[in-house]
Length: 508
Image 1: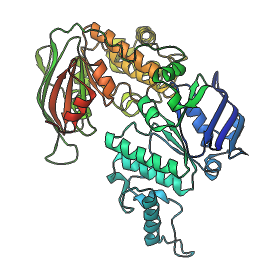
Image 2: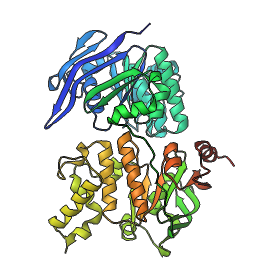
Image 3: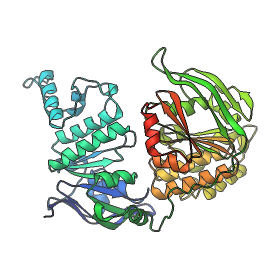
Image 4: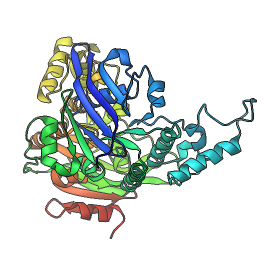
């Protein structure tokens, strides 16, 4: 028997200046189901979720929303909250210095009568009862800053349920989680589903969509193009529905023409930025050749990101070791020096470290090569515009103009802007830290094709990734890290996801 519809839209249409973000969207969420919501970046998923959360209030869009058959006009987030809707954003909304209990019941703390004095004993009891109900093993007195990202996310979910939320929206919930934390999250989702909580699960990770969801709704170009049980849909069909065409090969790796060593790292040690005497990278040595894509894998905390950011001179702690570019030993103490030696770094967090979000697309692209488009510290606009136009065309960046503010682009196009910034320096070595995180299927394939092209031009590529199919499929060699050390090197023809996980978890 089909469960009843708890959330429904009819004809939701939302316009921005010059753009129709949503076009008569129809959508249904049933009681106690996990509904996967998928689509390319810019398809309209985030806009629809902001309407559900009240961030875009009722007068700003056309159409109707029904919760349990009752028409609702969300004039703001409080109205959405009262209707039982809660959204867990990718960027968590917690106060690090406060305790778990204080975050969950912020501005709703139990008090002694009308005194306004917080009854901390009662606060911690209420929190413990809630966490026990959700089987979340976190002390109510623990400060948020001491928790892993996975546990912080569980606190966010507990906070939402403390408002009696019946509909949870999870936006890219596993983007920063370890494998173990993902499993814990899935257990929690299954538990909530069994209690009748309905969830919308937004993710670009299709393996997760097939693992955890009951049904999938696909949005493309602001329209609902399909909605059917997950069990009745193949991966190929889902990808085709998302992008509007068949993608024959998700990982289009081309045979590499690998030649001489272009980057060599010897005995690299990197200090922990906060713990005296601790190292986050320990005696790591490796070589990268021209035309090679060298994959670096390992669990979160294994030292992957610290490795590439320290090579680039951007890690906020002391390093020791030797770096050679084209056989010549170089000293890299800052990103400026790294750029001068022909290194570029696409950072794991593009919004925090890769872009200046309030600046224009074109300005972001030429940030790394201002000296090349200037004369006596004066920017030559014609020269700059030539560089900007070249990389917007080469990378097929979807933007209204180079003057568009970069924060308004989709995630995939923002990532292309970051890559364009480094291509503008004509790099010898490109360090890619999670190059396809948070981008849609079509954008991923475009990034893979670009990597092939760059490797074909003789650039050495180091690709750090937690996406095992990506690492196995796109790398010529794979280095596996565990607790700061390089523990295994695998050739392309011998690498499997199982082998990588075996060594990444400490296997010998």
